[in-house]
Length: 220
Image (cartoon, rainbow, N blue to C red):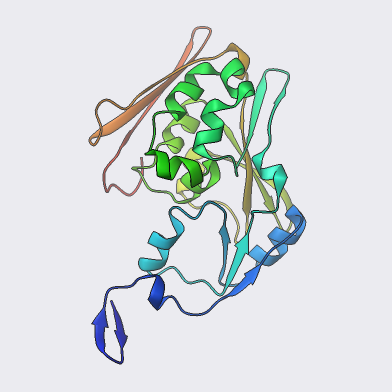
């Protein structure tokens, strides 16, 4: 709650303190701006206003809208690389995703509602670190690598490490890379929501199963 001149009110967009806006044109410029104290990255913003209402501090809003690299989807050999700025709607329909890992495209296409899917991004879903958001359990089952750019250079994390907030301040998630995607069978079950969801990746004789509570738990 915030104390204003007319009494206690619930936090909302109207009670967000003033902040400056940065519109970087390169990834390096984005990380420089995002490494400043009180800086917040923004792209789809479907979750960001909720974070503001929860008390998120923002002195500088770093817009990622003008960074096309974050919306790229590429395949390097058997590995699938998906930019952190790819929206749910676009990722589930992307030809490279559908051809390389159709199970991911199918599962991705069933999360959230259409309004959210048009704006919410892969990176925002992961970095929000909410157990009810579903890309984290998918990325963990796929043994995906989270590619980040920091002021000191590139860095990679696993999906579980992200929940431990292992990334340095100002780190920007640029992409998610799925190794051996072309040789992987992937399935995702969300029929048990709101209790839990489950994802499984099969590579030859190796099976990797992950599940997560889609409730108010702190971590999967």
